[in-house]
Length: 533
Image (cartoon, rainbow, N blue to C red; front, side):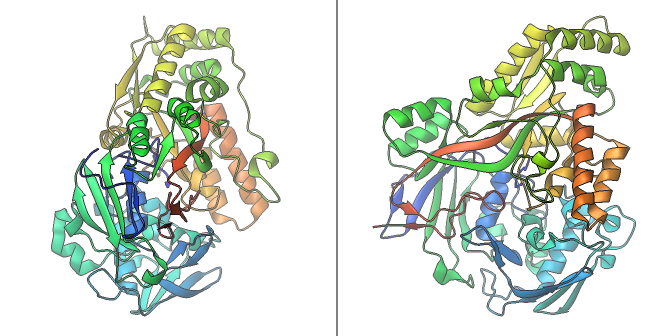
């Protein structure tokens, strides 16, 4: 997650003014929230970011979904039969699109074929690779009809696996697996998902208004099969701003029902005696290097020099300074499970000792290897939020004082930052990844050479081989050993520089009940929320 990144945004709860009617309304069962970023892509076959998946998770539904207890539960599929060869899904009769037409097995087949179609250029096509022939189809080696998906009838979908995949059911709750109805998709052409009227919805809510850069409005979907379990009638997002202070002021003034806090607004919230809530969202943040031809960051000695001066504890304790964040040591966060217990306890991550002199020596060796007389500035691509700015300025000072390296900060809007990451317009980018499903593979294959979300284009044959080992094995011990090798390779190759595992603190209106915070799945999830009297 994505979730996720996700590349993942700095905060999930957002805002930029339209007409404020108040944070909550019990009579109308309406809430107001703020968005930190405009969702850049609501075509579920192309979405890659947490802002878009937050909206999609409320307006669309996959074969399975997550319930209020964060467990996988029936969605469009009311039941299924699964073995090592594949799975058959049986769709519920009352699943409907927002225009009243039934959701059918063909809508899933069309969406999945669209996602792996090379012409669609989906950066998340890899998440369908557990389906038979999906990778070959996506690489243009086989036709679309070779994808291992069979529509038995309108309510029966049969999926053949490329290899046994014990976590496949959790994949079907992820956004790339959401259905798309072919006739509607083709009727919109290139306009599909561009505006509220260019989308169909089969989830608990529907997007009824979208003023780009300004506001969103979600209303209860009366065609949703489980509509009686949805209490909220309206989720208004009349504000969009990455500014944490602005969002906190909106909360104080009674205009929004929830907002995340940074170190400064946390102090204010504590002074004003607000109830502070905590949540660890499972995401990992890191510095990602650019390995493209011609980029200085391809040089291992340079990356090792940066690794030698960097202390994630200082970043977490002195710069971020928000409870719940854990210093980054690995691509694999601490919450992931191994064979018997925690993966990280079974396979501890290596730690680099801070050694400024070693860093300077390595930097000089890198300069000699590259044939440079002097180092040009390196470009750090980052976001616009106050938290992102603080982290970027910290890194800029660190590079200058420890290595006499100039770091040029390229601050961009969320959408433009994603575009620059994709096109490779950076030396280093502040990035992150949230889990899409409950298995270490959701992190492990991120830096495989074939993964389009590998924005720095890192490539290592042994890394790729270990991903394949974990993909092809049903033996938990063998899989975890492969993940441990991936962890080792990332550290020794300095493929990324882990920064922190994200914990968040936030405030929530006391009348807003039933909001579910998810490590995997839509977060926050308002599907089960209500406004108390």
